[in-house]
Image 1: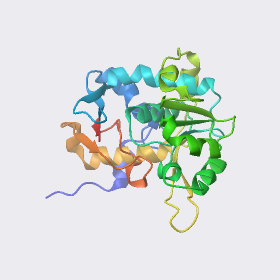
Image 2: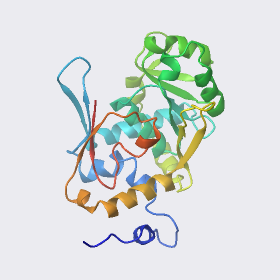
Image 3: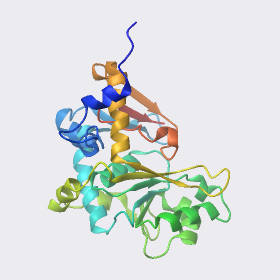
Length: 267
């Protein structure tokens, strides 16, 4: 049995001209953008509808324009490195699209454990996270479920967005309907390998949760390694049945990775 080459050789094959970083991440991750043109009919995400046996699916071709429009909405709302996007809900198609949109234009994406809002009485950890990252926008799936937490930790400077709003939150669909402008392309062009892609929080089991920076360079290095070490993925597109939460460190590189072109089913 032949062994794969060292990881250093793997990364060398993916180096940019004159650079020291594998594959500029925004060209291959978020996945919908390149694969929206290369494989528009392939399934990007499939989500089981709550309480039903039907599946809701989204192809790469369908996802790409939504990511671009959502990116424009994030720009219009003034999101930035200092005012990132926070997601306080579990895995969903909306969660994935917002995350891809943020990373596409260099806005950090911060997935946070919903338990900080739904299982806490004092919201100490959630308040700590909000104060640390100062989000400009916060997404939840259903506003009513998170009402107490949102009221406790979010001031008027944080734009709340929900798939199912009830009071103050904007609708996800309204953001997804934002007309795109050249601002998206310009912001995308400014993304570099060292741009922060996301902030992941530790569990806080020994104290308050700590933010861990993940750059586009880090995400892309991981994908370059996977493409080389698991080369069979290039010929056989896998379907990931994904149930671990995206705010967890072990799921930081999962959905829609652009190099292995995998599809994700969300349970």
